[in-house]
Length: 444
Image (cartoon, rainbow, N blue to C red; front, side, top):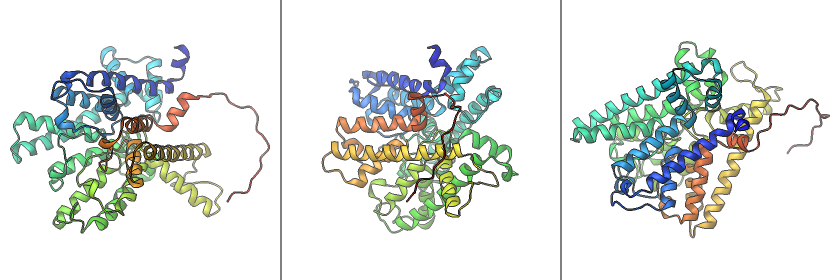
């Protein structure tokens, strides 16, 4: 245990695993389902993993299968997964004892590595305020809209607003409607608050805090903040334009909407597709050319130290800058007049290649375990699970238990992070005191 506490990064995978198993046990109980029956271990494990990893994929009809207790458990697991198990535990300790020991600070630093130990108390308070204030505002707007316009009972409107706000901010994808949020795709009072919440939660606390603090002087932002904020805007803009053109005339998605409806539903789907996981249009009826774009956006994901998954925006654009520097013959990779450390470039390459390998292996495994599955459908589901997005083309509920276990593993790995998981398994802090002679092998 003493060795484990010296390496707090090892507790991140363990913490998520423990909460997933506790959630599995609770969801197996008969009073968690509408029909008061025991849930199979596979279904409960899949749902718990999906909630804790803030994915939102489901093998059941969520609003009809689970009752109030089951849905409340999914909400709690999503909130814990979004905040980070270790960060949430430290928030409780802070509230009770008003102080944190060095050991607990180290545990939280494993989850929020962008901040130093001296800033931990202030960081935790700002995280808590940001999360709960944002979720409360979203819940108030959405709940009021459902109550005043859609004639929901007040209690039902509040519950729906709270549930979907927590799911949106934490980039989960569970909904209280069997067809997702398609019915609200053209309602800006429902769509836009959820999109804003998903974008804020997907930026990551380090980038969000610095961007809001230095909003008048973006040139002074750190490289990670610049890559995350500007990269997210680029991805949203490119994805919006691409999807709008690809689906403009598709009668099964946005083809029958008027122009404002097309614009709003397309923007909302793109804002929620990178890791949010809500369906504002029928994803299973997209045109063929739309699927590669969705796969790409899901794979990239959101910001570092955020509720989002994927390889992260900063990783993707850092590799882009490294490729551009190599093509130009530059000796260094620079972003915003700052030279990027070679160690960061190696980490970005490691994350990207490990992620490609995991998605490839998962796709091959899913095809091998499932009869008559199309390649694009398997790739879409695997990418969605690994990136903790939660979008589906309808394949997940048709999978055999073996296929579900593949997605469970990918959701867990995708939330913990390939590099974090690898570090937790094979952490090596030894510092080599010598260097070998350099050689340049032929590449290409």
